[in-house]
Length: 359
Length: 112
Image 1: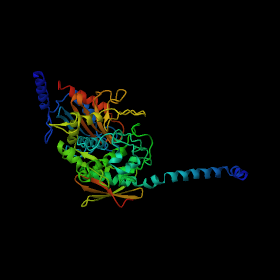
Image 2: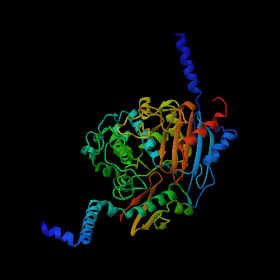
Image 3: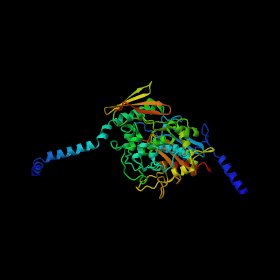
Image 4: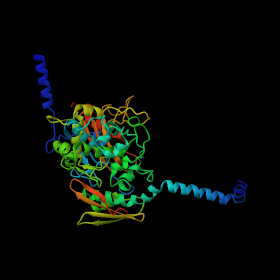
């Protein structure tokens, strides 16, 4: 009994020792070191504004154990800029859905059609299939190289723009739901539309704020919608780097925010479990997050620990979380070519913070 | 059958031309929806992303102009008072309108 009490006390103490941001992040800057210099040399080379070639970082922010240890901005981006996150929006949407899941608004195996009527055409697609990007819908996700055939370009800018979820629902089926991973902004957009059915019309427009942004102290968030008011869950969430790091810290701490379990741990476990796809893929999708492990082995970033996960977006946007190192890294960018390498940034960041001794 | 054969023999090049034309027409028919929508991409992308660059991310005019620059020419008109952006490109026109602090920008009708 006394041993149990001691254990409880120890747990309480360690929980109490955790650092959390209030209005601002607590700051504890890394001391300059050669490793930090290497990171900066990689992330902030002379910026090519003419040809837009190479690595073009807009913001780099590192949180270690809940403290801001590094922050730098470039170009026109500042600490106050609500930067476009592009497809990190998908992982932010998943986090909003996690709160709804904790409120008992839906179950992972529920058919999407229960919350979004146009999916009556696809009665077998479950919420978890959309979260795995495995709806099986015949979707073409290519921004720049197949403009004529690109579903995502049509969704955002032309045929789909007034009602993006319905545009997705009208796609034919390519494979059985839940079997094959096929990255799709359409799947994410349908999740954003299904959220309306889960929480109700009255609560929907403010739900990302009431459920997630307000409890986390995120003040800079903007989330654009289509003409029907559905959030563009795939692409159009904006916030400052400091605010995005709050979502990273929430995920690093398995859904806990200060004294509140905002996301059920069961939800975070689902997010971070590799999806076993029947079609081969070089990526490692989990439940609307990108992992560094697959069902069968290692993930795509050899220089980062296997528990690393990330929200990733077009043109180099990234929110990396490495729970085993107590790290959250936000990187905003305007990379117009494929020069930037996730593994390289993770490797250099880990080296730069390792020089600081024990955590 | 023999008449058709002889036509192909007499006019091999014309036959080939007709065949190519038929294939092309079939392709255009198959892709008619995509082809019809395609030219709007440039103006819609320019209007929407420029609007968000200016009024959501609060970046300067010069930066946003280069931010949305594509390999195809386009023009931009900024209605400062109502935060409305109109862009043209490939013969089409699109507009984006700032909606509010939380909603940012969105493409608006008239859709072209």
